[in-house]
Image (cartoon, rainbow, N blue to C red; front, top):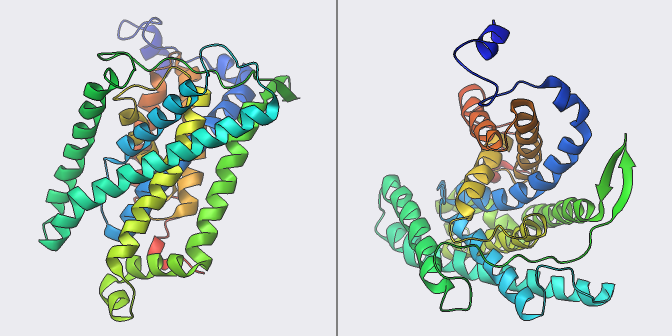
Length: 342
């Protein structure tokens, strides 16, 4: 039946393929590429999952928190002399410059997240506004930041209009080893390893640290946490900043993978994918964010190769989101932030 539909008058091969052989032949490259992009999704997804865990709020403006960090990374590297060609610097100098760019990206994203919390959400909490007001405000902040970047990009030295920032090549990529004939490059190992380390550090911070216990207490019962001496407003502020820091780190890794992908509205689709990853892993669950990101990256890559066009990766990602919400709304791990154990 499927073969009839795909080969019949309804669809033709220029619109869609169902090339199982292509998937089999590119299985390992699709898997490792998917894990690399999935690690970026996972880091961004933590911002969604932390805010949802503490406030039961979907912060749709988090995609702009990420893209501001990406601009911070590109502007820093450009000012340090990086450009379309790989730099002629020594390894230690490149590592130092990349760490500096990551710190700038983290600070830019954290300050943006803090600004959104203070300007958009805190006044609504004080007025005990309905949840719909928070949702609409999040969407409004998302577009407001997008178009502020659009207007400021030219005056700050970037290309004017809707053009992307100049391409940045950070270093020449080298293969490290191969898996069944598929070369694995150093940039893939760096991104996945760094994402896992940052996730483990975040998980330990939330489960073992004093502030982390405060985050879990507010997520579980904010009123009781306040009676027990936890400063709720301070915890909420730290939650936004923490999500922003991880989004800033993700921005550096994203620029490594897509050197010419920093554009004023470039965070929107990536942010929705990261949100889908958070839902897939179990929104409100920090470990679930990484798991969901990795799975979504791999599944989207499989769909792209199987169906024959890069745009299918986005379609598959959002179909996965719908299916997860229908079949298992609580996600794979399903544990909320407030119920996580120390």
